[in-house]
Length: 439
Image (cartoon, rainbow, N blue to C red; front, side, top):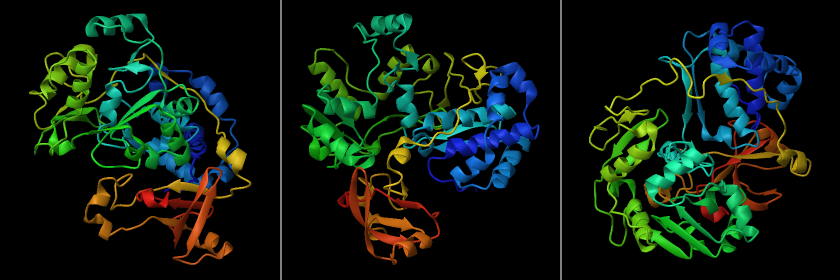
């Protein structure tokens, strides 16, 4: 267990790769045949300062070495990472390094190995497959590519934009700057779950039209001009895709409550009213459309998904793919790229005035923002957010268990009850965001 300080993933991963190369545990045949850029990567990596990174990360370098040797020496090794890995200023680099670990050791393309992202919600993978990123369309196709754009235009019968849109933080910046006129939020409580709540609220208040499609009156829905009542997963049929690329059927169990509709049907209704004629939503009809535009969905039908689903890519004859990258990568060769650890701007700018790192966690009894679980009996088990604080820090600040303490940052402050525990390292504070009344 390498209990690193939050935000120091890049430092620890670079240390691991250093030791794998130093101990001669790389898979040279795999590197030579299926990767590029290794020598340049190696040169830069071997110049890192291990002592400095040990101090920065808070992890003993001998422990990192042991972990690196264990991973690289195993006949088969697989890695799993949660979405928190990405939610740092160097989050993209951390994911690249996790892939580099697999490339270094040849742990890709066979049973029992690989890089496995544990997606944050039940259809994050499926949403990505369908093109929610602003620079890609359905199937991860580049919307700025003329051939791709032509394909979309011909299929949908309209001119699909070629410009890259806003990511979520950019949407909020654009709204505050008066450049974003409308936003349609489906099933996400950004006010409670996104960082810098006051900025999110300011952005929504500055947006002319805010549409929220939801099950409950969430903190975000309070700022909506229009609320569209959606349906829960039990009230509609469709597909979810998980982290192993498995497209699975979700079958409707009960009818939506009065006044609510399937999310797909709501979108279809809006499209029809805006003049783009669409048939009513159905899961089989939706998959038929998707199979024509997304290459790796070509052989997926509602009927052939069965009980266990299929792992994309799925060929026209319905044959799916259990193991990806067994002989080659889609892009050709895997590319090594060194990225040095860099402290986050947040700490560089505010670290002296605010010496503690505050991170978020989840409690077993509540899911994410708690919009659903706070409406169940779970609230009798867990009724409030508490601040995790190490005994050393508690003593230093004259805090006892159960005290109400004020935690402040450059963005605001909140009062919360202290819970003194050794589950957290000195210098780190942590709390959940299950209960909106804290905000």
